[in-house]
Length: 593
Ligand code: UD2
Ligand code: MN
Image (cartoon, rainbow, N blue to C red; front, side):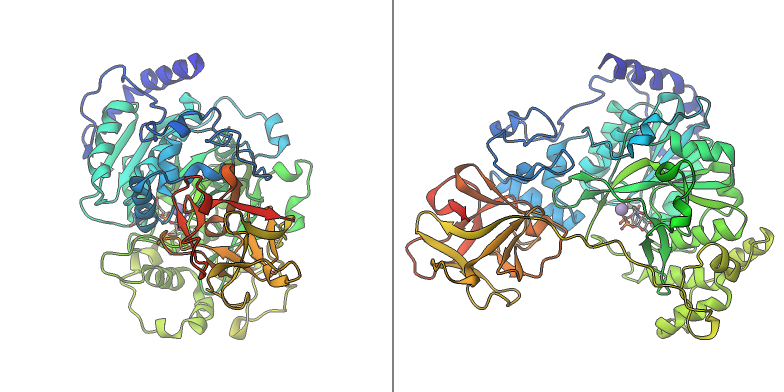
């Protein structure tokens, strides 16, 4: 910890003067600060300190409830199935509200606090790499709209905790006119009293969207390199140096880290394979396998990889180059499309875009976007239209072939962007396709010879851990489908056990799924945790289909944070329900092989 403190004091002294340049901009929460904030790093500020069971927590990677959970599966070192345990109505409210407002498990996010260790997901060879000690210093820009405070502050602290002080010039938080009360008040206080002066908070007077939001952030930045992050990220060990090095070598290089996955349901941090960015003619971003030709060379898996596009949220770019290249299209609203626009622009106008396998940043990937646009418009279509008209030449027909209704849709004035393209003397979209994304299939008027189909990320089958019956101890009955086990949405009930009946056979696999008769997965509703469990198609992304066997024979549901019980053990109906885990008889189950 003394090392951390030295580092922090260093950040503090090193940058307190450079703060002056910020005086004339409308930055809120930057009143004079106490020289030594009392609690720089509160451990579990919003954590459930009042929960005795959670106080036993020893290691962040171990199960928060102790060693008694007999879950046979270990995941990337930090899978704590019962981290989302609901103890009372307040917990339930936090969880359900979190899913509604943020589309991830806010109860777990709050419990994790503002600091945690994450598994080092880099290839082992990355640890042997060295980077120049002289590197350009960075301004980290984080735009947010109605973000969960704990997720936002974990993003900020992960940067402060894992970035060498001399490379971190400042952090600029851009509040995109959030409405949530804690962001308007608690965050302002926190920035003022708990964070180094080099963390600045800017608030937009009206909602701008992430695109203009980032431009506003960049306009306040004074670092040599801009690093953009989403507001629900956690940076990993040595994340920044590998990003800054290629920029130092060539300022027209734009770089992205590998985006690791933080589960929206369990907040588990896990490694992503190294893939690169592509897109389809609907102008949606997608991940592609890296062509073998890109992986050859002495550095193998640790060498930077050319990427046709970026996902959008996480990248670093020389600040002056960002300005020269035309920042972003300020005519784009709220969300979507800007990532392809900047990717095309980088490649077509003389730059390059790389993914850096040795730099890793986790991001909470959620299943839906929890916010809309102020006017309810489809901003993705509006933004995509603008980029198609400015950058795609005749190839915009590929987009219109899929979205004919957009042909006549207005998209605002694009003369500035067309002029920018001319001024920068950018190459054609055909050049981009031929040279940067030759895998892209073109049909119709722009067709060329068919290319081999690209294989998508291989679907792996989770290993089976156990096969058998789900036996309810109190009633001596077994868990079965109420109707046919292949019926999606069907309820489960308890019935007399029949050891010859395949329809009573469950499989428990390494993804913590419970699958009945090899057909459907036991599932719970994400937003309505009071709904009874049901059978649904297995989706493979954990959360609502993740179950674990714990102490007192409990069957625990990971995303709901509750246990399965027989609703009324005396009733012949045999209904089951989710309830706060209390170790009582109706909640006791045995998986019998
Ligand atoms: C992905 C990108 C995201 C952006 C988007 C396309 C990653 C990991 N994420 O979507 O950065 O490029 O594709 O546009 O590559 N926000 C605002 N104001 C708004 C709306 C959003 O500030 O009006 C913030 C939001 O709080 C978040 C960031 O912008 O920090 C990105 O939004 P998102 O997380 O909903 O986008 P995501 O990850 O689905
Ligand atoms: Mn995001």
